[in-house]
Length: 476
Ligand code: GDP
Image (cartoon, rainbow, N blue to C red; front, side):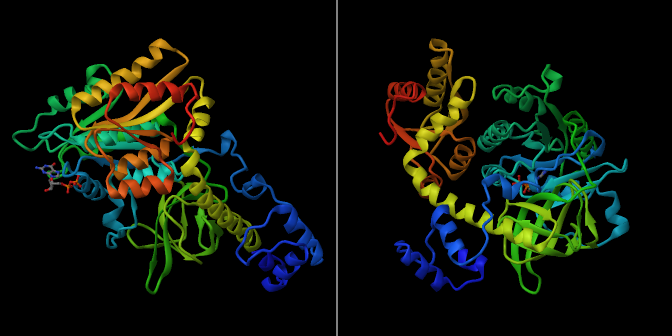
């Protein structure tokens, strides 16, 4: 890479390194001082770039109050399998008032936008489920403003409903409850309301602050009411952006397509993205060759909150990657190279992290006011889950400076979803008389998530106390 930047041959650079006594291979990383010596040796000028320098100017320019205009909310739909997430996404999509006039075939691009009769717009990410949501968050992309939690009125709260609640809570994203399937004779919306209480979701009609809408995705009942509720929630969140600046956003989907090359669906977060713009998406650079909306229509620009397909990427970015429009090609290449290097370093660090994730967890926990230990609890029976959560929460009664935060708990083995949640929130996983499945183990190893197995509750409490007081050495 260094040779590349100097437009010198890599073998010459390796030779020069050898002269300095550094026996490096072509792909080896060298430290900054050595690199500086080499660059001088070859007669080039050096510009030292720090962490901040590279990204500054793309995220750094701040908007003033006057620049900001309301933007559409970005919504993710979550809930238990078969409760109607896909049906609701389809039904909501069909409420779009401009669809009729503009025509075009519905394209799946990972997100779509609905315009309401009032002219207001709502953007839906159409990959339902909490795994996708939390995976994005683990990668630093918090694109969702509001979670719509679908609960079938004939089935009420189920395990994945609880998971979804906990994932949304961990992300600090407000929830709107869609009580679905009210057309069914055995629908019991009141039971849903009651059951939600046990998970600390108190609906407005019960004196709380979570909004809920009874609806039927299948019979298209109350879809407008849900949309109005989303807009109401969005208004409270005061979502705004500045359309008059260079765009930045997040990649929500990316693929390589025959005949079209690398295609990414981008959710514009700030600024306006235009055809011809030069950009970096993750560690890839490019120039916008074409923009397509969620109906496959070619558009010239995309505004904040709008999802578009972007053509013109050199390589394939990943979902969750940041995209930024920059002033020129040179800048785009510089940032792309910097991000590529950072990615490699992170990959290397994640291997190292396997051994010290506990230390990091303690360090992260101490940054807060209270020393907090976030945990995910999985156990073989419901009684154990409650007993463990209860005893862990009691720790702060003895010592008010510390607390255990239970992000999620449930009956059953440790799954990938648990690992993703733990990773995103830097939490430890407690397995009580249960194990992690193979996929979860692989993921935990890759991401350096700490899983601990127990069969005696007392030991959990002891360990938690020890971790909280920072006394437990890692890897015990
Ligand atoms: P998902 O797994 O959460 O995406 O659920 P789907 O959208 O695939 O729906 C699961 C099943 O429930 C399908 O057979 C739907 O037709 C049905 N369904 C969805 N919404 C409703 C509804 O409002 N009323 C009734 N009666 N059935 C529904």
